[in-house]
Image 1 (spheres, one colour):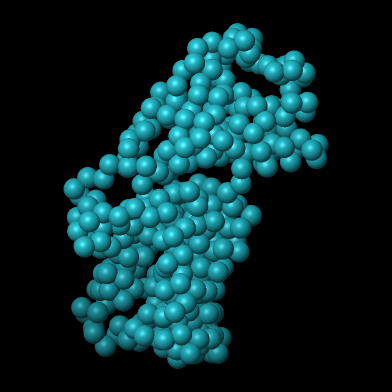
Image 2 (cartoon, rainbow, N blue to C red):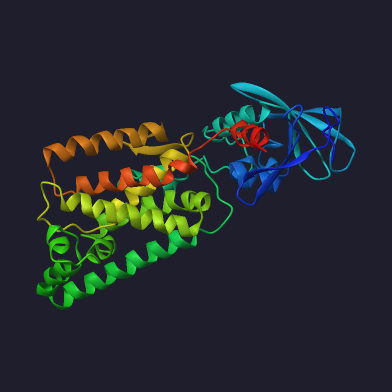
Amino acid sequence: MDCPRCKHPLTPTPVQEDLEVDACRHCLGSFLLPKQATELLGPLYNPDLWIDSEVCHDKGPTHLLSPVSGQPMQEYELVYKCSVVLDRCKQSNGIWLDAGEGDKLQDIIADASQTRVNFFEGNKSEFGVGSYLIQLFSGIPLEVWHPTKKIAWATLILVAMCILVFVGQVSLTMSSPEAIEAFVGQYAASWQSIAQLRPWQLVSYMFLHGGIGHLFGNLAILYILGDNVEEKVGTKKFIFLYFASGVAGGIAQAFSPNQFVPVIGASGAVAGIMAAYWVMFPFVRVRMVIVFAPFYFGIKWFFGIWLFYNVVMSFTGVGNVAWYCHLGGFVTGLVVAWPYRRQYYSKFVDASLSTN
């Protein structure tokens, strides 16, 4: 295939593991098929989502020829806060990006996808009565819009396991109230469990919860954020991230000033998922219902406030909450997720062209 701009041959350029993009070493332009766009940048960047939206304007045929079909491509201008003009091959639905246009496309799609206006097909930014009531009584945040392509099996299985274990806890309590204390002592995480060489409790404690509110809060956040994180890093690494954060949270709590108080709950593991989400998807906004009114926050602000609050509360020790478990899991999530942090398109393509 030849470059539509300068007619030099396009070079298959590795940009990620098992992913290549046809790029021109002379003008640094690149041709991106829909599957490549979604694998490299995420589901938001499939042209099918935004090509007919209000932010995209058809400018008519261009003189540039598609490297796939050899036919003139169609020119489109995307406008939202800034603008970018790109070319699309109607036959393959691929897009031609000149140098720097990929970065502008990322900014426009990311910003436009997080508004309250339904810019893109399938956008669920208009929350219904059901989600409003759930948020009103629970206080949980919901993403404005962040679709995924695949079913997050690991996330769903973890949610199911926590629910099943909780049902077992409740059954045990109803049959023998005295047995629950011994049960928690056997499977909760604490300094004693480490000192007495029972490291499995640093895993088992993640599946126990102190009540329905505790369970719902953890699993709601895991379900809302986990699918995107799992899709980004893959199932195996997602499972590693989850359990590494949970174990680190348990150890942090065990060495905290409240080390002799057993800790239960998936909070440390979920905090790691929160940190990973913060690193990978900083452009996402969430909605919360506060005093009956909906408010929208950038995810960076939301998690920043959450982190600050947990740090402050860890010094005060107020409340029957494992603050150090949250912090240990969050820091671990940051470290594990850092290689997957959000990067601009030019860093993938330009860096690959300069090193190959």
